[in-house]
Amino acid sequence: MAETVKTIEINILGHIYKIACKEGEREALLQAAAYLDGKMGEIKNAGKVGGADRIAVMAALNIAHELLSTKLGNGFDIGQTKRRISSIEAKLDEGLAQQDKLF
Image (cartoon, rainbow, N blue to C red; front, side, top):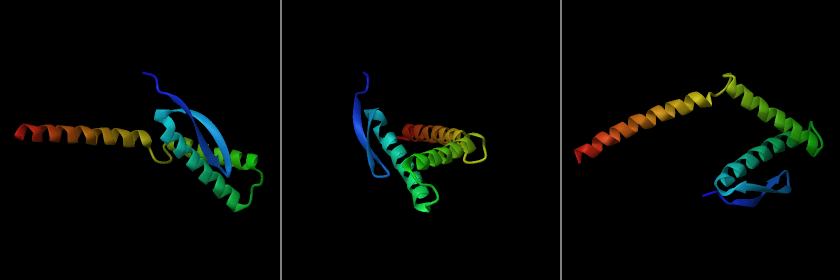
């Protein structure tokens, strides 16, 4: 069954925006909005960039740089971490399966 699309309100630098999203994506969108609001707040508080549009562009550039650094291996490797977590989960499942046989 398709997820229901709902409108939520997010607050970025004191401005309220209404955004449509699927119910299953609500929490991720709220986290993304909070992250963006934080980045934009840091830039605004530094006082070196004026105007919401310039602050938004600087925040977008900073976030894009973080993402590309991660993808290029200069930062935290999300893919490797996901593979390690999957490996650990598999080992845990195997261990728990053996425990189930004992009882």
